[in-house]
Length: 442
Image (cartoon, rainbow, N blue to C red):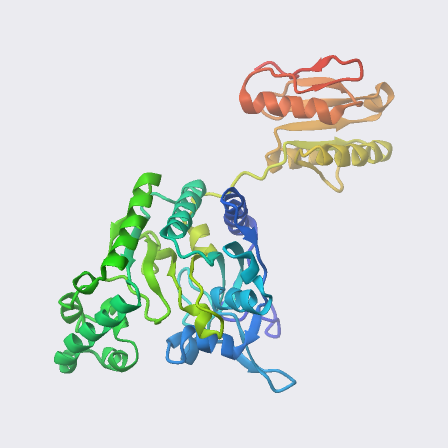
């Protein structure tokens, strides 16, 4: 590679092969699960007016002050590449008058941007799945999102070793009382706190609770619990969430130190955590943010949501799904290649994964078919063309059968069904109404 060859920007990545297949598998599984739960797709711009994120994330947070990709466009407006999804979705909810459709269950996925130190599972351009319920104040909405997240992790096969940690931040009254109690506690130990936590005491005292600095831990661990100041209404809300999770069979554990620093967060806060990714333990997290849309200038609107890192979920997937073609076509000669191209289209339109090499003699094409992982090779030569048949060869056993070219896709589908279910089950009929059965004996 020459010294003038362009390099990828630090904190970004190029993907192909198994890595890209795992990434696509996470997205495909999310799309399937969100449909099961009735979450409609939503798309929002990759960049917004900077004020959307400054107001929603808070001017004093690290994301706004240190990590956002902010630039001035040619018209002199300050724009920011989205560092998260929720603010843009809330903005779209307001500007498009979607209140008339509330409650709304929305889902999306795509790239986000934060200028932070790249490390395992964390990039400057990264990708997330996102699910939101806007306009529902009931704890059942929290339960639905959590059950959906749990099912997603199970369907991806990554749920082992992942724990749902759950907390409540209470209602406005509870949160304010807890904040006062925490400030009084930390003020009494101000001199023992780390410099960062002394700064947080002024701006965001709740964040001291999850400080990693060993100087802060004894003080944070001895801080008042939110349960000490919980209002009756907030306690009842949390009980309904946990009862719903129990009823749905979702395992959880209480983490009374799990917090969200921004004032618009209320009630449920949660993280699905694992130690399988080293320091980056959270694979999915979220909570209820009843005050966010109000901070953007809208009416008081209840909402709850979560986001999950696609790269992190993909890293947890042990192997990519099998994407091998079911059949590989092997034409011999120009006339056969033309016929095979026609068959290839018919087979694929029938929903069967099929492949055909662009060039090569029979030996090379058969070797490629074997390397592709195809279960069968469909061989077409001059003899087959003359007899209007195709030879279907099992790549595992070497058994070979001649199939009529008419209804070839139906016969291949019948064989696929037999391979999948391990019994003969006629799935289609020929022109005379006769069932088309499996081809090979098991």
